[in-house]
Figure (cartoon, helix red, strand yellow):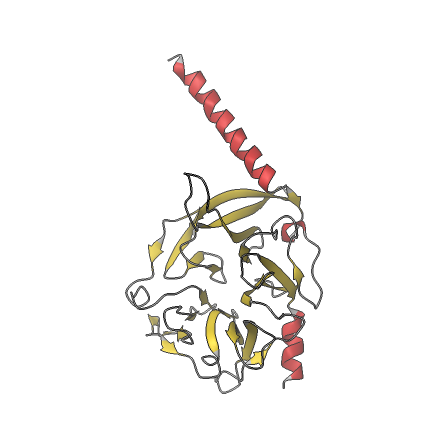
Length: 297
């Protein structure tokens, strides 16, 4: 019986040590948007020196309640006898009492995205559902998506359950799967407007399916991969691929766009160096989407 107080003490010390370690790596931030001032109509780094540092930080996404933020970094160890190699790891924060606190860390099974209602966290061919304050075990989407010939990096869902997703094993093969009469439909390739150029990948579909954003290498681009947008036409057809312009794209790798659930901000990845060893999260006011639409009507 005398061991119980000592065990409790060790548990408390371990918990405090974990919190101190997390705080050393990520300082406590206060207020909305991870404590960051909103961006303007030209892309800028997200949380520079805090989230976007000199290493490999990418795939930033706010959960639909805007009270959780997730991003991916590399926890790999490349030297000494403890080397592990590449270890992409998702870091999750929660807004608690107006302060952003790191609450979870787990190996990346796919690029994180959310259903518009925030009840499901998609990770490529798999997902987790909300279970109170936590998440369920990682579950496969099933044989329709979990195929050996498909290397899904990112799957995005609309409010009606439409899925769009990529396939790194077959470049330029962004597919779409709708729901009809409550039944999931077999995925089909999107049109050549989307699937052309090189490396069409990381699609994001608006909750109302009014537009689709993805990245691709094309002749009209600024250098490496650029972000493109297509607006759904009145007849339900996806419109032409429109380069999102110099206020979003650069001469380096720009990819993996996501728009926050309130429709206010667009976050994406940008390589800072040509080798993509230093990748940061950038963001821009999502009003730029309306500007692009109005300009191209």
